Length: 95
Length: 95
Image (cartoon, rainbow over all chains, first blue to last red; front, side, top):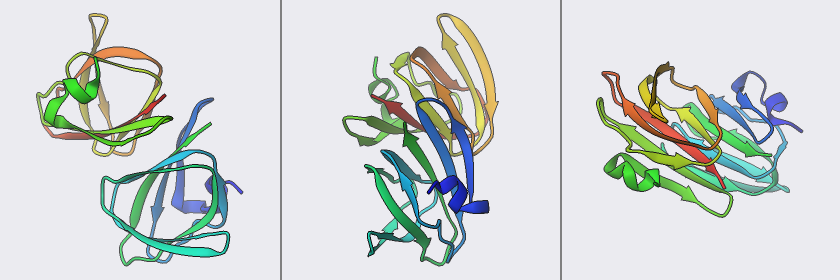
């Protein structure tokens, strides 16, 4: 599943070419992305926040500060904003 | 020249692995990065701002809005914050 589809109005594709795709996610408290898959990717936290990710049925909650950048290899997960504030992230997917 | 060196205290390496390097640039008005080179890269504007870039002696000034993401192939340039407000960008370099 493609996050650009599953996350609906909370996601915006900023840039998409043969090497990368850049998406901006604006997640209100309680919102979920829906189950989706990525290849190699970087997530940059514009705002801080708390997210709960379910990967293969395993749930993990983490709190991030503004300005953090996280690397992830290929993954399938569902991400929920389990905090009290809106969270803005930028996802850079490598092709 | 490596921007992580030329831009001094205005740059911070957030993430560096075999596939990408992610740098955060905080440029006060009038600050310059110093002449540096990149491979393929994405620049995400956390804040908006006005930047003047000199590439091969040719100067170009552009104004960007917060949330814009710009792709660039390999380039050597010097970037100056020619606006009146501090500019924060995130540069994702592909390896």
